[in-house]
Image 1 (tube, rainbow, N blue to C red):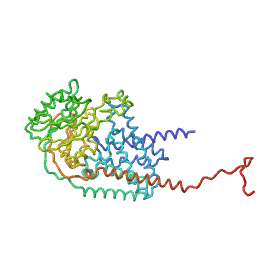
Image 2 (cartoon, rainbow, N blue to C red):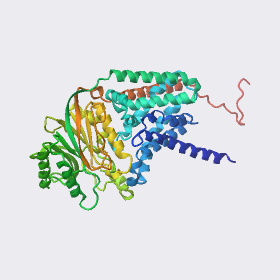
Image 3 (cartoon, rainbow, N blue to C red):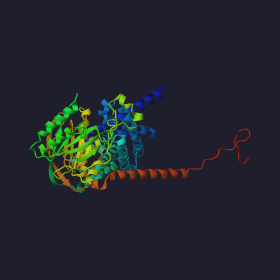
Image 4 (tube, helix red, strand yellow):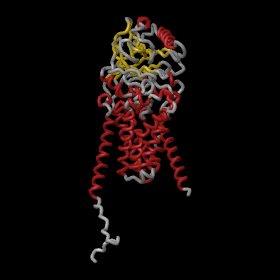
Length: 524
């Protein structure tokens, strides 16, 4: 009589274990930034899914692990979205249900060498499919891609120039798969070690072969970070603080001054006095100033977030309107259905408007810059396209003031290192309230971070580089390869199922019965 209770307790225990196992990789990202932990963080999750008694249970292990992962990497949203954070995590976590099935399919029991070898391709490919789908802007974008945990590891940054953050995710998952088998199945230890060796050899070969950016100059970029400015008239007082900090740059021979996201809260066509004041700052420091306007525009309906370049004579005409908006923060997807999110948290009361194309600006002194706004720096394709269009310097204007005392500012700043390494172009991450950071064309840090406790202007000597990285040239080839692997798996499984159906014995008809209901005895 105890079996139902024991079974229910086991279900709850296993579900809790899956959620916790899925949450473990969060410690690989900033602020803890234990990059090495990424190579073992998936092992408990993999071991749990491979031991699932049924395929259905493996899918649940994948789903609940995905829920734990998405909750952990977005935990800083809780004060703003409250319970809706868990709703989003549950929906996106379902993307890992097929991955849980794959883990059980290829690693369950004692896998043969062939099955284990296939797992080293299929499971990382399945993970990349999950990252690809959830990277769609409408689902929240590519925040917390596993490969981005390697942002401060020089060999990993070199590999990012070959295959982007996708290649790093693939290799990290592959290492976790091999380690899980090394721990769990004695018979699989030899192929597991062989898998680790092959992975390390392939990564080392790519690292050695990948070309290094050719540094051919330097520019002096100033970042203006006003710090937290709250209360009544915060927009006006923030602008005044940014003016004060920019004046300190006079005589420092800067080539460009960058203000953070929403640094100007008024449409400059309606407030020409503000445009004139920034133009005066440009004349003072002898450099253009890139501001970010977050306001309702006079020339078209709606609120836009726009990077606007201002020179000594006023706005130059170069303007970039943010294209990829933050779900719930800047717009609510399917507002007619999900609009209730505004009642349980600080979701967007009005949808921001989207830009239509990326822009490369001529920032004076012969410098061509490619601006992005806020979490657009998380999208590898945006920085790659700007590089293809001739950008010599990548810029991200951001504001994480809402999440000031969380892990979000550090994690956001770290993404610029990946974008720099992928493209071979330096990148500036300028924020209102920190963390602001600058990275060279190999993803190496330039100068020091401006933390969330700073209100300052800082000048960075930024190296410029030319040349085309393999990632810029060939694009998201690891994702395309993963798609082929999954497609081949589906085709193989389909053929196998078809053969099994054709080879199955034909169903026998039930034996004929006599009028009395007894089977006919043939031969009588």
